[in-house]
Length: 309
Image 1: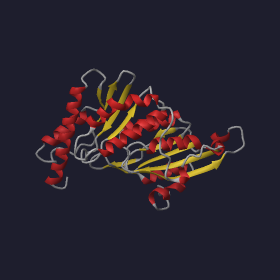
Image 2: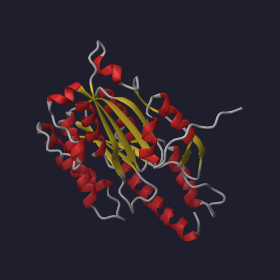
Image 3: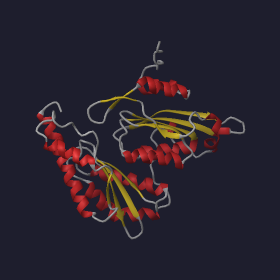
Image 4: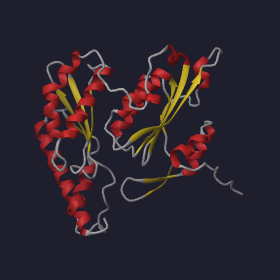
């Protein structure tokens, strides 16, 4: 931190975060109810809180991430939580899932949970309030068969449901302020596997996602992703191509064979932020004949990395 006031701000946040985690652990003591993603993060945060100076103990590089399995009469609902370092001054990141929910039901449940979270007062611990809302309302989504989800406010990215979608390949280039949350990253991969989508997810700051495949599957993928809890997310570019008439059809037009998480890390800075190796990322795009999108993300034309002599 630049000064004692800044350090005090984060110490206070971390103390509140740990107090909430401790309370939740006591409320959900049975095996499998409360699952901490990485218990060493708690130790790192405690070391930071108890240190005399940040010169002795580095700022925690990871965030508290955990899951609570809320068991009701009809189903088990997993609430995944991640605390930004600024929480509770900002919203926590949450995502709810259940094997008993259809994807439409799960989408609507997460949309409504996000709205509940947004109405809660910042500066106050809020996971308990979300859990109480889930306890009271989650089962009602099991019987909801129609989708009440919002349509995109961007007409060019909306789903038409027309025959044209079946005969066209789409490619969505998505930008997020950051992608760190392990639950989100896992969910992104799961959505891509469930749908007929290929491409990549590049975690970090910024976070970049490419999703290509049948137009309706890509639209579904984007609809699911954008309704997760993000600081900022947008579709920077959408491409649509008519399927070629050959034996492979749409698959012959793909530029990625699968959907995977990629990394082009040059060096890590304080905390968990890292500096992307721009040259390697551009090379990766060029290898997949996508170098032209570099300008859409970074505002400048990409230049190939200098040749080594």
